[in-house]
Length: 146
Ligand SMILES: [Zn+2]
Image (cartoon, rainbow, N blue to C red):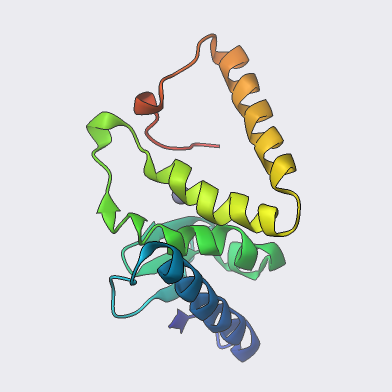
């Protein structure tokens, strides 16, 4: 399903097609989708939130052409990791790593750029550690804020 604040059949069609494509892909990788529907919902906030069986995307975010291949499959995949298999927040947030790997990294890998994605992630982590003065164990990760 696609819920837009103003009608736009072309945009709705792109989201419906992407929804089917990614639900099929992740179902083949991870097992059946657990919910009876998935909805892309246009929110008035400029954010991207993955909820059980739906995602909230801001008006500008939703119309960025690359979102259908980056954040959107990421939010769909959270229905398996995070909203399907839940995270125990006292033990860290492992779902972001698996979701980023099978959504963001996989998309880059399919374009032959997986190594660039991995290198960029390692560079960002190295800069993060240098800025904050210490490494953190995976169990210390709760959420991404930037
Ligand atoms: Zn995420």
